[in-house]
Image (cartoon, rainbow, N blue to C red; front, side, top):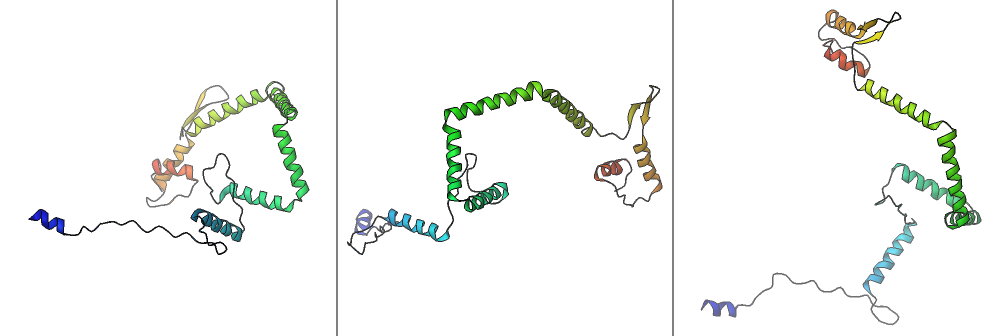
Amino acid sequence: KLAEALRAKAVIPLYSAPPAPKEPKDKKDGKAKPAEASGNKAKKGKQNKSGKSKIELQEWEAEERPGGMMMIKREFKASLMTALPEDVKETYHQTRVAFDHNRQYIMLRAAVSILLITYMYFLSGLPTKLMTFVKHCDRVAKSLSNPQVMYKVQGRDGQPILVDDYYKGYQWIDKHTPKDSRVMAWWDYGYQINGVGNRT
């Protein structure tokens, strides 16, 4: 009986597919136009109305990102190209194409690059200056990463001298200023004033 009752009942679908969109008809011949074509024309019309040209992404860009130096460069280049006459722009593009594809120009650019690298490496003294700069950066990095309130130096007589002026100054602040006093100093001294002088 239960099976017969279920068969007798009408089955109502839970989901029904939406009706297919009607294609627009052409007024001239009465034929329907493809939906994609009409959508593309609508998009093109929007682009023409806005007057903004599509931005060509560079090889390192994944999407258009407004702001920053790249946007400033795009705006400057667009204004510059708009101000230039057509013959100047055509000459510029032809020159760029020649330098990028002409074999003679490519060989000339390679020769100039080789001469420049040879001069910088063998004649200009750049490797020596570069090593001096690297050593200086290494010394400065080590000194900045190892702050000290006391350090030793060599005196004129060759004997080591302990320089503890900073430490004595912080001790003086701790002994001769109120406990709730505020000391104004440069930010890097603030850590030592707080840790050694017990002041903020």
